[in-house]
Figure 1 (cartoon, rainbow, N blue to C red):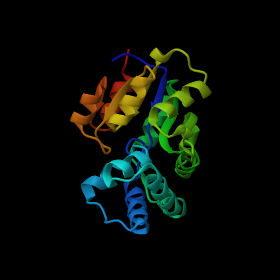
Figure 2: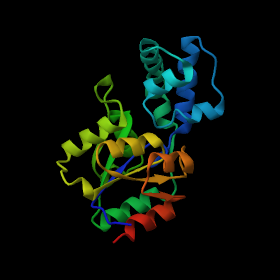
Figure 3: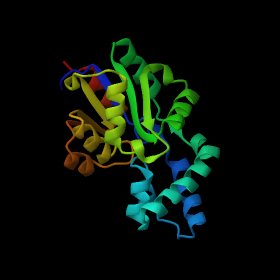
Figure 4: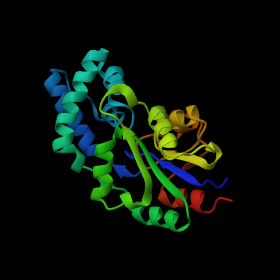
Length: 219
């Protein structure tokens, strides 16, 4: 495995397990939209991708309906859901080790940037990141490839061969590839091995221990 200088991190399902808050926010949204609740397997698919895409794909909503569903989602999430998550055990230790080894970490998440910053600050790990890049509240920066491009530009990174993305879903991999970046997939989040392999990851880590070995022992 090659050695990178910059590590771009997905947030939901990669740094923190945000499933509880997202599931409850989706349920709240669907209730207000007058729609039926989704099964647990479908709810899991909402963790990671842009919400408008998920509401359209799994609920059959038009673009206008999807935007309205997102408004209801954020109504719950901003009040309660943002606190209904937990950082994966060992993440703080790994980020500290990477920082001490002179790696530069950046968050690139499809979650709205203020929400991402609030979550990372809550756990006291925001200090490990060069920059925390997230989606905008409007549709101008919603997809993962848009967030990654924004992070690269904001951080002034031009040598993309020195950057790797770490994420748990195919949209992390696809977003990275569209920006000319490699991507490492993790299996402890909400995606599966087949999903990540088919998207084109350069490596897969089953847990944080394997991820640490991939990143810290690279040459």
